[in-house]
Image (cartoon, rainbow, N blue to C red; front, top):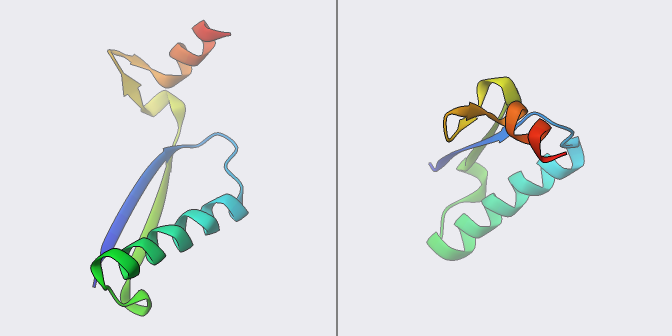
Length: 67
């Protein structure tokens, strides 16, 4: 029973995009590892950009600086 946890920043990812990610990960595990899609769990956690840090600063700060 595979369990895959995907963490992304919460910034405009649509329900359709998340469904595609879930389907794609499930398909890859079935094709590559022979895992049963019916028992494969994929969880997407969306993290606020203020709560995600890279290189000592939040994603919010990094993105603000890039614009």
